[in-house]
Image (cartoon, rainbow, N blue to C red; front, side, top):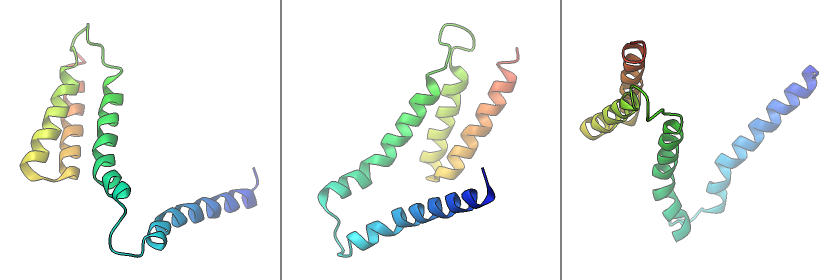
Length: 109
């Protein structure tokens, strides 16, 4: 692959991303969104998070030690920290830290 095709690909991807960011503002200049878009705006982020959690849990071995305790421990930390601080980034970072700690402590034994 030549440098010119890489440069063209980068600019094309950047243009498409920019277009997807600008298009809603161009299409919906009025203050109120259509009901369908309002529904999607409210419900898509939690559904995406649910799908990500289910995807992460699909490889858990439920019949052998540690029986999913590591994953559910990390999920519990994420939920508790989010309900406590109402900060998604803090909850994700803390859940990741707990998961990494538990995977190194429990899975190595």
